Image 1: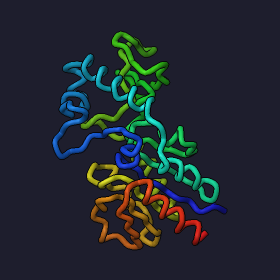
Image 2: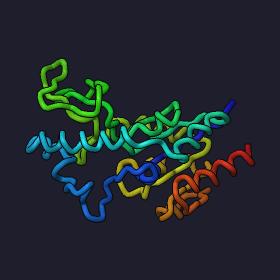
Image 3: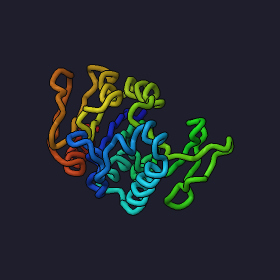
Image 4: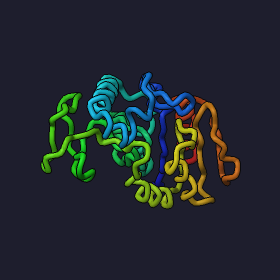
Length: 230
């Protein structure tokens, strides 16, 4: 029976594919104030601006390609059962070939009903137009969890973490909750590989191996260690 690896990925893994992601240091994302484009209040106030912002982000995602870090995680499936939990809204894990992916914050290549978040639709092309409606007759919006909204997949992700035999964290500072709390659900005796150039504060956890490198360089090292110990 294959060991189960649970991987939590964040902005750092997508950055190597050229995708700029929100950093809370200045509150800006691609020059936009986060509060103007990534909250329910922003959508109520100026839906056209929010729609335009995510249409632009979607075009960037579709032009980007999975990098070696994504490919390494997909390759791990040859020897392990791999469950990826990602904070990212791109589809690069899917395009790299990974099979089991939980998107905590939605996925930008889908739209959802403004009235019922459970109504999801794959987007044809790269834009959602104002006036495009769901089957209930309400405006379609990006399938993205905005600041101030609940994270519906968090309980499923926590259950996945509880069943981990190995845990890998890649490219996240563990600064955004509730995603940052997922490591607390990983059993204490499970080995935890932390891959990030600026390793988050995890010294109070047991069985930690810190690899302070980029996503690709760090995962190459993790891959070699796992193959040696397989």
